[in-house]
Length: 159
Picture 1 (cartoon, rainbow, N blue to C red):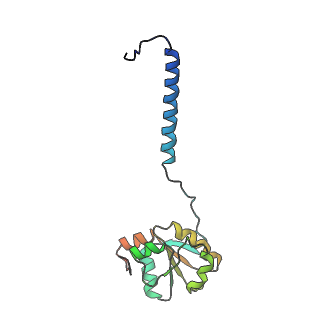
Picture 2 (picture 1 turned 180 degrees about the horizontal axis):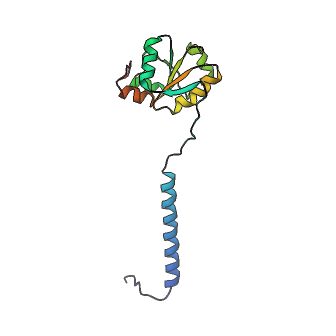
Picture 3 (picture 1 turned 180 degrees about the vertical axis):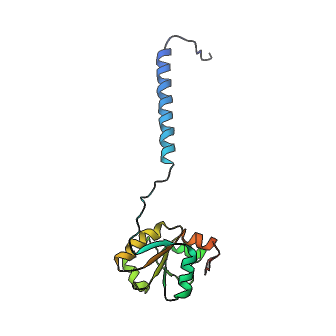
């Protein structure tokens, strides 16, 4: 026997259950949509020793002052796949002992240091660590390594 929508007996319970299920489905859909958004990290304020500069300025500094330190804080896989700015030392920002390992890079805190990651987020966080250990001048290329490479700036290594 086919379902009769006009049936009076029990129609109140059916309508109530239907509305409850519809409400539950709507709430679930809203919660999944809201949770699909990636969590946003709080913006990191650069310490006074650090500033973001255009790639042209970084290139000029590296050309005029070859003793400038360069630190790449991307992951090892990123460096292997995409290359790095020539002469850059590598120290993964996510390394468990990032601050302690920084001393082993051989970078001189009294000289300017170009600090970069893929887009700039990790570099901004790393700049605070560099400032805490005594770096006086920290320069972050605007847009990170990705912008550097897109602009046709020199890159060594990578696939």
